[in-house]
Length: 276
Length: 298
Image 1 (cartoon, rainbow over the protein chains, first blue to last red):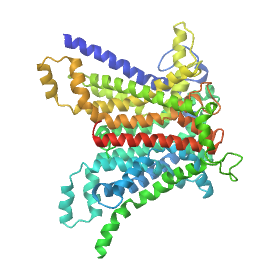
Image 2: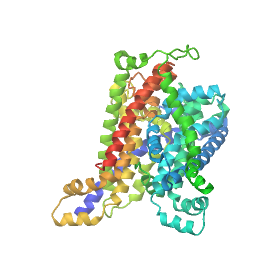
Image 3: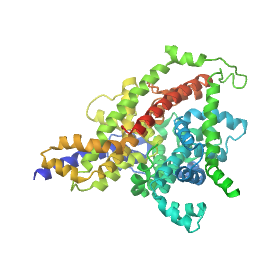
Image 4: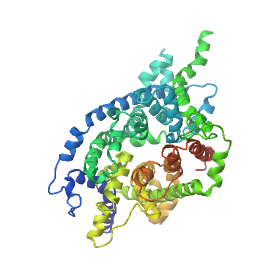
């Protein structure tokens, strides 16, 4: 009996916390269904009386939503591929190989990672101007890769270290070379870390807006994040329901990914916690 | 002979591309920022800037009107308050989630993950426009329903600081809870059972078993969150000081302050000196952190 009471109390606390976490999201969904002239109406129904999908229609068809979506996808997938291709061999080398300057360069990685990438914008801006790389996805892909690469190396390295070296040595005796070992043994064993690292790069790039709005000047080149950011102008009273609809639409891909990799999150992330 | 040469060279071929990118996008901008920090570069002196020595640095530290020292103090306060609340709440919530035989754990965990999965700029903006907005924001609507006056959530310095704190908790707690919960899974039940036999109550068990075992397991997550909180930009910038929709509150942290000086007032030289100072602070914290990790006394 006492135990049952305790459980009920715990449920009440946990439900309260969940409400705190959920209310802003539910309210945003609710606003996205409102017609703009009923914003001030004082009913608190989750689905408003005059619920309309009009805001979604405006977002999807009157704004260049699909162009932005395509741009985001292109930019994000390219960044994930590029960053992973570069980070995987690096993390492998730092885990398994001995070479001069190894610990020094690892230390340098940690220190360099301390520089907030947003503060590097002036320098990168000038660099891009000089080499006329403004408005180019190639430039942004390199910038995003640079921003995520150190995290990726550390996270992968942390996981690689937990893979026993015996398996590789056995393969080496069988005559496999390093490349084969990485492809056939390391990649399958490190699956959780590779999935989580790749998805973290995906989510971060998908959500990046500061570099995108400053480095892309052509609105048709905008990513979803940049486009959505530019939508919430000063006159947000009128745009807010449309913005809410856009927020929901933009968040859906990240939400799907996030919950898709949920079961890998703890093992794929803590294992790579900064150990030195 | 050739194979030996290959063996020495191979690691560098593996790490080469990564270091090329890091050199270009991470190292070069830092170096360049250091150089700019000694110049008077701004919108009028974009190309014909000149070197001014340590002028920008002295301005940051001695000119009280410049606002940098205030921002620095506020950033430290922001980080400490956030971390203390997050650690306490994450511990409590993860312990509650970990109670034996509790139903619906999976559902609670999934629902609590939602804010973490939301894009952070969207979170900041839906809080700003949806929750805190003065006229039609949910919080003020609720207050009016209760017959109270609406509050200017983002207008005063203190109110805006607390509102931003709430949003940061909303965004950052899920990760902490998940990491704490993951850590709790690693504690063997044997410890608790033997403590119970010695007559320990729940509080004793938490203090003398859970916390000491959990500490090393969650330390990486706490340290990472400390740096992220220190560098937090989206929440404070988007909620209170977006160009064109400033709310009147002045709650600059060092990052938003440096950003504003670079991209709003275009004072690149001064802003770069701030970036260098911030970088130096974070580097010092990182080195202290590494030293303590190596000693193993975390």
